[in-house]
Amino acid sequence: MPPAHPADPEQPGAPPTAHRTGQSGAEPEPGQSRARGREAGAGAEHGTGERDLQERELRRLPGYENSGPVRIGSGAANQLQLDVYGYVIETLYLAHQSGVARCGDTAVLHQRLVEHLAERWQMPDEGIWEVRGERRHFVHSKVMAWAAVDRTLRLVEAGALDADCAL
Image 1 (tube, helix red, strand yellow):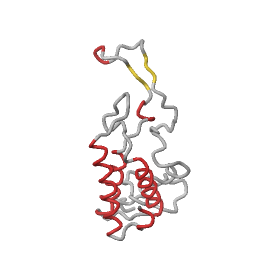
Image 2 (cartoon, helix red, strand yellow):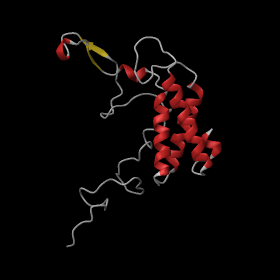
Image 3 (cartoon, helix red, strand yellow):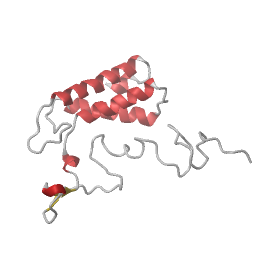
Image 4 (cartoon, one colour):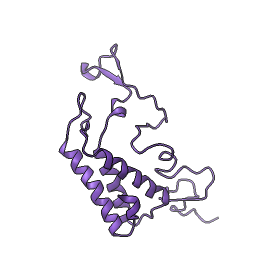
């Protein structure tokens, strides 16, 4: 029997491919099942799939070098972080530049992200720093919102994204 080719996705230990279709029981494509039925930016979800991210303090634990309070959960789950849209859309743009084929689910995800950002980009947010307290206007967040729109327009100009869906 000839040795398995390391790039063959059907062989054990093979690297994952960017896009596979028609495989029953296959892992969903990025942005596919997680984006369906839920608005873009509707909340954080960690690897376990649990949605209870309520942040709580564990006062009985001192924390690393008594740095307490020790918190579990994620206060960021309820934060608005506008910069994230720029990072995600920049990634979609770089994927296109690298030759990764777009699929319909990616286009829908991109459309939802841009629509969500268009409604919120002028709002104050918690920013990359996840500040506690009142939301503020952060230059970094506004620059990343601009980057999202810029990369979307570049994809439209390249013919990789339908203008009616993008903006």
